[in-house]
Length: 503
Image 1: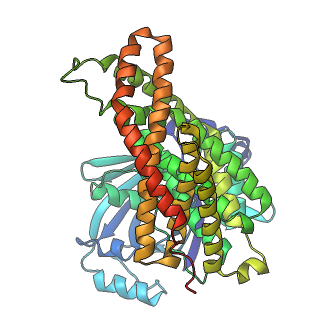
Image 2: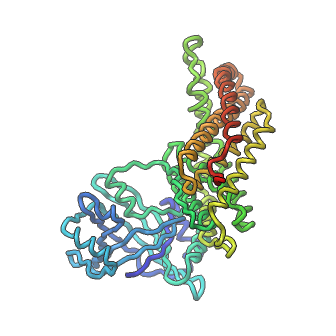
């Protein structure tokens, strides 16, 4: 058995030429000519191997046939490590070389049922990178496609496989490449994509995963686990936003960035100061780059959409306003996509992944009690929200927005630490925070939309009537929501918190 450690990077097909011109490649040893690899993946009709997280593959490389068995990779930030068994293939499967008893037993039991499911066919260029005598990395550039029946998907990716060195050396090479070429780390293997294609599972935005931290973990270990989930949400929605028009990809991408910023604030006492300062700023700027597209999406769906002029006004009253917003949204989406395809965005993801893998704690952090830490931090978040609530001018949208931010940070904190305080009281409290945040979110969206529409009306007088109609249509709902959320928030911030220790 060997263990494969690699960093997988996605890139646009038209970026391959620029990649080949990168100084790291022009000076690298080229290992033979490009080869066409034809891989066939096998499973049972019930997909028992996939459920057991085992991949069985044959590969035709020139006139050579190989059989490969891989187990599930632990993949985060594009970096994966997994056991692998490879041997010549003579036409019949032979699992005798698999030296993991449980895996071999499973394979032997299913050997008579496995059948081909899908193929990957791609051209591979391989180079050897040796940035120092202690480091050797194989770089594979793969271009081709995945075929599952009538369905196809494109392969355009780079794999950096570690021969000698450390995982940080992989990230260093990837970071140097990303200075000139837009590269994006991805945790999806060709096999995973093939199964998705075979099952005809539609692509969907990646939502935040449920927290799975444990009380035995140190605060830094808990931070790392939670941050890796948010990192995957960031990178997967970035890849999705590049090929899909669904605005939910950009929304979930920004959610991932907010979750990471909240995590850094929450775990600030156990994080290196330079790490916290740098990434708080970078994540804030990255989210701001995409804010215009999201604001117009919300304006169209949640503000203009519900405001029906009939029966007192003509049905087409708001059409000019909607058309104007649609034209601006198209421009904002084009700009957002350009920002996502810029090399800077991939560099940020790679840089954060590299530093996350490298984070290490001291003896004090290792000895810290995570539950006690969580109580302390959640208490601080609640106090901050209470201060903002008691001092807020309820007429001022900016102060209501700051209260919303505080409640959102409190909600994220409870979500992160929820496995430590599982119970009905926590569930009820979290539902209350979510409802208050939703109501404050509507108030914030309405205030932003009002400013946008009045600004458009100043420039286009024909939009004045539609803009004032929509603002007036929401006025009563805005007032009702504001009264309700103040009562909700007061209850949440003055009653007993469910994470407090019993005394």
